[in-house]
Image 1 (cartoon, rainbow, N blue to C red):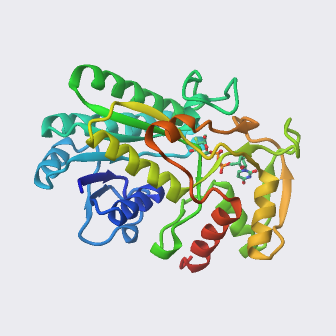
Image 2: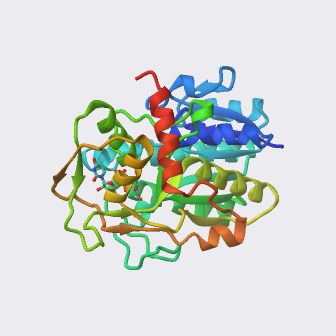
Image 3: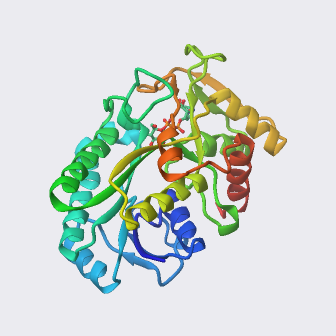
Length: 324
Ligand code: UFG
């Protein structure tokens, strides 16, 4: 059992990971500035409303709460927004992370799991993508994550600071029994948008059907948020047990096209999905699928909810129960 600080713990993946830590018997402490997260996603008493750029407050919290390790989610995540306001992304994602690492060094906490992204690879040369694929982000969001990964490499070398970077593919699904799921404002992610289309009758737009894929639509590796949360637990436990710093892809290794996701939503909800065909979205590679071999071999991770219908069904249960 360990005391684990979860930054961004009021957000989507952060809140599900906080829940998974509790189920595993750990003691999470949550930090979130609530700029994008939801207060009600954190049990009262666990939440400390502060910004990762407030180094003094973090040092105090890490010491007072006797934190053993940190899982760092707090960041802006919208690719499109990052191309419009790059400086805001670097300030929040990079400066916020460095402030947290400084606070950890000062407080003597030296284990960190970092929320990174498949966007670090940009448009990959080889798919499925292994961790050895060159890092070549094509937007400021991806670059901000790569910059933090690089800072962590140097901290490992010169500060005896151990970290695991998890490069997520497409996080989706929900933990409906715990009332936790995906709620972005504005929503840009495929599955919640398709579910909204089912509810409102307003069509979702398919961004391009002329890709070099079997049905012409983009292929992504959709990873259930609970399987993703579990990878953080294995990572933090490995560090606490003396394991080395590392970088892992977190994806199922299976790809699904946009049209396949729409078909899954129709199966699960029993309703027709209204959709229109639109042009390609800038910066969308045709196919992003993880090679998760390293994570399976080194940390013993295995996705338990990889089935697309299970993912959609959990997202649908959460969306159906949510007040909005
Ligand atoms: N899509 C549509 N219509 C929509 C929204 C999405 O057709 O209205 C398509 C996209 O073109 C893409 C797929 O659905 O092919 C998934 O799109 P999302 O926006 O849900 O997710 P992305 O693959 O663009 O982004 C995800 C994460 C990012 C991360 C990126 C790279 O959300 O944080 O993967 O791995 F940077």
